[in-house]
Length: 226
Image 1 (cartoon, rainbow, N blue to C red):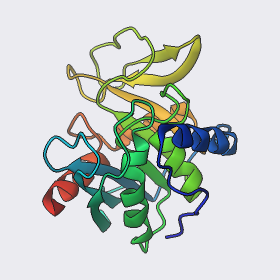
Image 2 (image 1 turned 90 degrees about the vertical axis):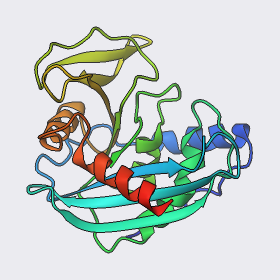
Image 3 (image 1 turned 180 degrees about the horizontal axis):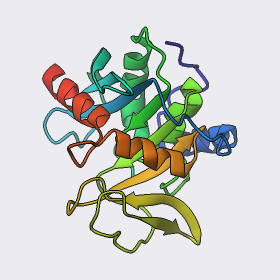
């Protein structure tokens, strides 16, 4: 599939922040998003060791699922090293080069991308899901295991219960309970979808477990590649 070259890979935090500032106006946050995506891709990255420094070995995996059956349609993986340091708010730059390579290895063009991370729920309002969405032009959302920015009240205990995630007076995501009595996940839009549709799609992708099947399959593939 096609992934646009919109910028060189930055070497410093200042250059990376400038890339985010340059690409942020390209976000489409008004599109309704795919209500019933035929194919959904999960993106995840695993690291060898603690993965903390530059030069750490990593594997980026993209797994495309049928949107109805959740059966695997296609897989792609790229192994590389993290060339960018760990800087809060710029973490995507550690993973994007390998993720772009894995995306380019796909023959299928998914209707929706689900990232293990954040979209607008990010201090610069430009998390991994935003960046991947702009580079591919595809609808993209972030589904994170823990919160990064913002405050929230705990959602109710039942599957589908939600509360808003608010940062600086702005709703940047939603805290969503995907299974009865389990810890919630943090959903935020990245590109070309709205929050209601994003949460409905996350629930469709979590019939049995806390995390979406997209994330679970991509995590397994990336770990196997290492």
